[in-house]
Amino acid sequence: MAKGYWIANVAVKNPEIYPDYVAAAKVAFEKYDAHFLARGGEFEIAEGTGGNRHVVIEFASKQQALDCYHSPEYQVAAKIRQTCADGSIVIVEGI
Image 1 (spheres, rainbow, N blue to C red):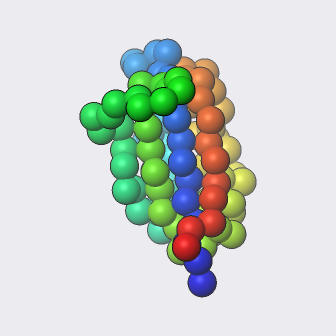
Image 2: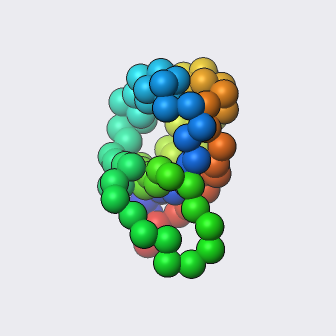
Image 3: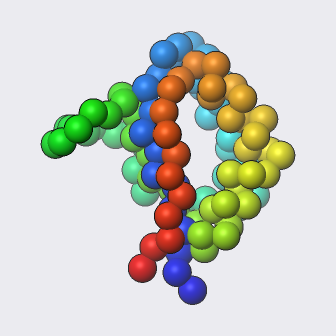
């Protein structure tokens, strides 16, 4: 079965509140066995525009990645993130 991935590009607007999102999201990520492959490390924009934080999260399957995103646990965290950051999350199937 192909793995699933979240690819997030985030522009943190309020770094004082963002840790609250990280703490709340941890509950969902643990429940859905998420594995972080990239999480806010040093980056260089080679093309286009980007935020100031980039994250790649691996799940056992695309369905598991979708289930995590739509879970009540993550939706609590998403509401916090939306108050302190702009960005996008794309959920893709791996090879």
